[in-house]
Structures are given as structure tokens and as C-alpha cells.
Image (cartoon, rainbow, N blue to C red; front, side, top):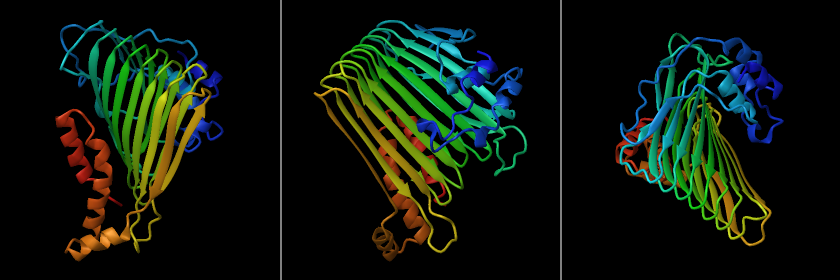
Length: 378
């Protein structure tokens, strides 16, 4: 995939594209010509932290990229390709060892693309873990735009009949860095996917999931927490397309926007005409933090759940809530001798942990909780 293809598709999506309305990329990543300039870079990312079970899977470096009808994000990730793997999970595969597709460590400045593919065979079960925390190798200017470092991760997943996949994803961004993830999931009959995401930091995060239920009786479960601090911006976009009978999906996303920071939830639930007996639920819960008397603007939240229903025999619901910490709850804790900042931290953590508690891996869940307990609320 060349940078020319990316330019042909119009370059970075901007506010005129509904899915990117609140996170236009050019201010963060620079002019579209930057992709042309950096696509020939010989930078090779260190992917040594990645691992997978030694038996049963077929793993190859991904060198041949699919150029059939990508969107602008996929085109950019492929034009900036710095590495990736193709993993084939055989039918009936069962393992307690997860596949680890993490990206952690120092990275040189620039735009870097990682492209991975996973094909899970019929009746197979797999857990995928991704810790994504690239940090800039060298000095940075925290408030400078475009960002000195941005990593684009493009993951394509195919689930055969009856396949089950769990994804645990932990994204962290620092100042002057951006992490943008897109996951495309194609689901056959009776397949199940569960995605658990924690995205936190004071840089740019865009986490995008595109799930397509092509077969009957498929299930898609998406659970996520975004927490933006110190001027950071975290955007969660999901699109689930029900295109078969008796499909089920469940989404619950929470967001915490610290003062001067912003979060986005944009969830599209589309039920096609032939997707009768679909049962789908979508919920967005958002918390805007402020520090009275400190001179900082309150955290900003954009929440946009969306239903597109063409079938007539379905059960679908959605909803969004947003608000600030209840001052009477803060007052109650202060009346018990707890300082104001600590009272606000306790209440914020209680709001956030509902999502983290769902993570099925105890070790990662404990580390996530410890990281959240150390998160600033300003």
C-alpha cells in the first residue's frame, strides 16, 4: 500500500466525516503529505515483547498487505507499515496461554503503522492480550502539534463458525504521543467476541472497533473505560453491524474526563433488514471532573449513541448519561475526615472500576486497578 492510495482517499478524516467529527486527525498528525514523507522510513519497531503459544498456531510475519477497499485509517497504517504478523488458529484449538500482541517501549519520532491479522478456526477458543504503550525516544514539547510520535495499529480478525475470542487491551498515551487503534472483526455463525479495553493518558487516543455479524446467532460484547487527564483526548468509536438472524450485542462504555481534558463515545448499532430477532444493548456513562476554585475548565464529554434499525422484529436499546461528581457524596466523605482531593479520587475510582472488574484475567485486572488508583483527577 503506497502513500498515494492514502492521498487518493482524501487523507486524514476530518470533522466532515461523522465518525471523526470530534477527533479530526490533521491537527494532531500533521498534513497528509507527512505520510508520503515517512512511508519510506526504514524504522523498525521493537516487537520483541510479543509472544504466542509455541504449539498449535501458525504465525508468519505480515509482508503482503491487502489493498482491497481500505478506509483512510487502514490505508495510512499500511502505507506506514513497520511490522506485524498473520496468525492462523486451527479449528478446535483450545489453549489457556494467550496470544500477546503488545507494543511497549521507546520509539523514535514519526508515524508508525502496525498491521496484524488473526483467523480463528471453527470451534476454536483464544485470548488476545495487547498492552499498547509506546513512548517517545528523545525530547518532546508536551503541547506541540502535530504530535512527535503517533502509532497506528490496524488489526483484522476473522472468526469462523462457533469460534470464541477474548481481547484484553490496555492503551496508555503520554504527552506528545498518539495511539490510534482500529480493529475489524468478521463473525461467522455462532461466533463470539468479547473486547475489554482500558484507555488512559494525557496524549491522543483513538480506539475504533468495527464488528460485522455475517452469520446467524453471533454475539459481540464490548466493554471499555477511557480516562483522559492533563489536557489529553480519548475517543472511543464502535460500529456493530447485525446482518444475520438472532444476533446479540452488548456494549457498555464509561469515560472520565479530567479538567481541561476531553473524551468521546460514538457508538453506531446498525441492524440490517434481514437481521430479524436481533437483541442489542448499548450504554454510555460519562463523568466530567472539575476542581472548584482551581481555575481549570471542567472535563469535556461528547457522547453520541446511534441506532440504525431496518428490521422490524428486534429488541434494541441505547442510552447515554453524563454528569459531575455529586457534591453531597463528596461532602459526606469529607465529613468523615477525608480530604477533598482524596474524596473525589475515591468516588471517581468507584465509577471507573465497574468496567475494569469485568476483565477476565486477574493479573492484568490487578495491574489496571493499581494504575487507575495512581491516576490524577486533575
